Length: 221
Ligand SMILES: CC(C)(COP(=O)(O)OP(=O)(O)OC[C@H]1O[C@@H](n2cnc3c(N)ncnc32)[C@H](O)[C@@H]1OP(=O)(O)O)[C@@H](O)C(=O)NCCC(=O)NCCS
Image 1: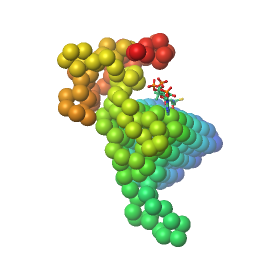
Image 2: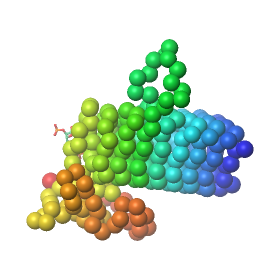
Image 3: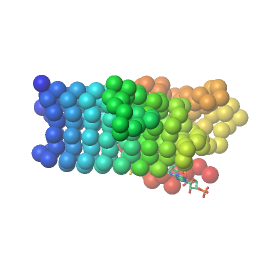
Image 4: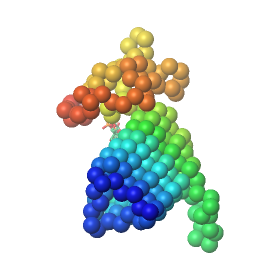
């Protein structure tokens, strides 16, 4: 049976198949298709022309822009952002003649990560918490928490704060401060960045959850 929460909104041009679940206050806009077995959490939004395959699990407060297909094998944790027309995949070596329906590879998008417009995620990898994939990047390897990944193939260019600012200018103790939130970060060991003030799995306090300054104004030189 289809379980669409009473507070959810599904535009009349979209289909939610029997056996799919859509959580409270989630919005599904025009021309989307949610297939049987897909599980979508609360307060998510899906822009125009999105497809969510059976078996996909999506957490809460996930924001998906226009033209995104989320294929079987994908798990998306809370607070993930998928930019317009980004591409997820589920078979590394697709061949039309060879059926690999039981071999879909797993891709995990961890809490709070963002995937930029038109980026491609090659399947079988994990994108870490609050990692940031730049527009147009092609990511084919696991990505650490908070890593900023740019280019084709994507390379780590630095660290991005939970609020989406490049972290720069470490002090004598290696601490870098987000110019928007004031939250402090430090690389605790090579390749492992941690927020010193807010646990990665803690929710963002409400007063920190609305942006008020555009990116360039806060850019650290
Ligand atoms: C990556 C990003 C956050 C900017 O990071 P940044 O470090 O502030 O980048 P800058 O603007 O300072 O550019 C630094 C260099 O990287 C290049 N660059 C910036 N974005 C890039 C991208 N997406 N891919 C490749 N190179 C990029 C710039 O051209 C510049 O190159 P140069 O040093 O040779 O001049 C941003 O460009 C981006 O991709 N944001 C995602 C936007 C998006 O998809 N939004 C979706 C919601 S609508």
